[in-house]
Image (cartoon, rainbow, N blue to C red):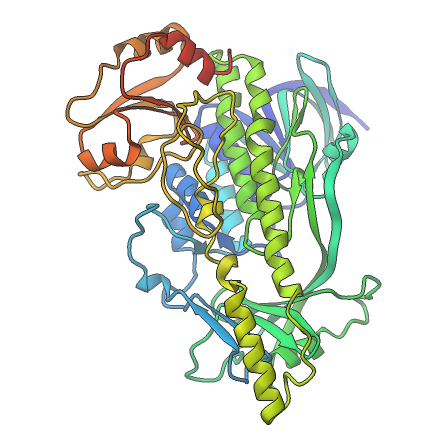
Length: 540
């Protein structure tokens, strides 16, 4: 088989899912050329994810994609209603209703909202935008055969799966976004910590126009309970006729060739209505985090690093956070203002977040497994009424809304121990799951506030470091600006006189990283500005 001569690219990305595409976009947005190889053709016949959380929407906003995601096709008047039922024709046991997108008011904590957007819509949006950068090359139906880290370069051999043509790629860095069964991770021998199997699941995808009765207020998600406990979840995929029935704790030896998915669909709907099964997808719930995030010039990202139950919707969104964290550090090294040891911060910053999110997803899922078995649950009469009332109390007492009210996870993640942030000696704030209290403490996401011109403070951050001078009479920024220029660190000084922003950020000088996290803050001009710049660029 013929192999072409070696060609060079700054970053070679393996895997063309939403995390790989997000990394391509963020790097190209920073001026770093990429090549992406994906062994599949890029189509998404059965969407695995359908929720883009507020933090990921903030990144989409940065890339100019938030409106496209919002307008991808999810009906704005579809209720974000979660219900707990025995079937869809019986009264719900418990309901959590967030209204519809059309009902939502601007949030105090973020300029964006959670958005339902199945992968069948989300991936093409990312793919089209990634392809719009002239510096990017997206190679589908192309597999990574082997790679070698030679210390100063990674040499990878890839094959076009249609023509059989091989090529050698010399990359400054290789980033594996190749999923939970990452071949790159296996080749490197990087181990995972945790449980590889919490339960075996089967997704049954079907089309049906009569899931809910005419005139009935629909639910975007229905958790299904029977006499033996929770057995499945029914989710709206497109807000119209495509549905996913998620069957939990199935026998591992289930044969999909003979599996009767239609029986479970009928049981969930609770009525004889016409439907068409369009696919089935088996998968494993897991609770695992990699012990290494990088080996030399090879990085892992997304599901290659962390595998969690989908409960809470953290998987893809956590992976996109990985991509954004890594992209600006690659930019710093490629552009020459950061040393390669800045990459040591990738593990330090991202692994605690991954562990927290994976553990939270498992904890939330365990709530459903802990629902008591009530043999009379589906019976008519006094015994059935008593069983259903018992279950209603259980849902309320055990905070089942925690799966959906998780702003502390989505917006509150912090890099408290990052070597790239300068501590300000303030007390470490609490780390709740369900609530988020904005803070500009170093390591935290810089808080959102609405500016006089209608923009968000988040719109100020992204391509460079940003030094905010807050309030009507802030300290001078010249010393830090000169120190950044001496080290060739890109820094923009922005004056924000609005008093409510100073109140929120607490100090008049706040230095924000390209990923939107606070690196340093102070009430006065620093006495050693070069030391601060060297810290935030990974040189200390």
